[in-house]
Image (tube, rainbow, N blue to C red; front, side):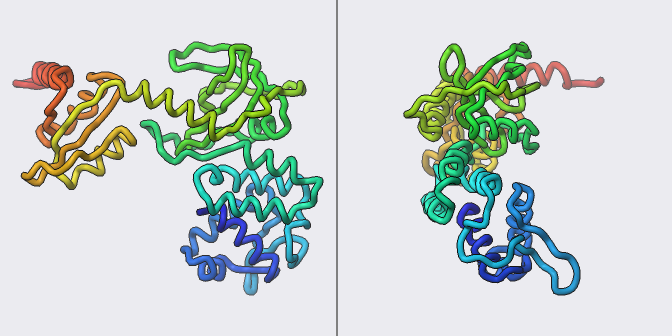
Length: 316
């Protein structure tokens, strides 16, 4: 896991004073490109890691070699935990790395560092489209979560309606690079898609957060509700075995193989909110996918096929 690697990178740099990406790659058994990305991630996050160009150069941890992490400032420790924290809910290795980090920090830094580690989590399973750009407002929201500060949002919902919200930010979730804010509102817990936040401004007012709030638990509940809505309609299809991975990419966790059919094809179960949603995705497959059931999906495919024939058949 990346969290373990980031800790290992820091410890190696403390022990040696200066390292190259190639040396890290050999030590950590990763590619040079991966080692370089880890170094750049630490530097970008505010950890005192800097490149030294030229012959005999490499990357150095400012302050020289150390045997622990007590040389980090409070701000640098928070930045490191914001980097490592997202992996903790899904990785035993990351949790171990965080415990080691906490033990190496001065007592006065630990509360903020542990809060930073819990402020953000990662859920690698995506919901549909990808949004690779990290919203600029994520850093502001992370600071508000850690500092327990209310934030005033201008939010645009899925129906393009704008509204002003005053929220208590409780945590951020990176779901395959689409970010979500879990927050308290005057109507209870709500989840906001961060790329729909048009404007965010910290208010300076203290935010409230339930003592028993756990981001991983809250996110599991959110996922359960969304998955229930997204899997209201199931269909069984036959497809060539070599195409199963493409269907899995299109439908995500709502795609499961259901055994061999005996003619080189595989039986696959697919789910979406409606029969039309399934038909729209499968229409582009043409005869490469055969829908066995249910009848409403077959009917929608028939209707879509008739529409396309009426639009494009015959001379223009």
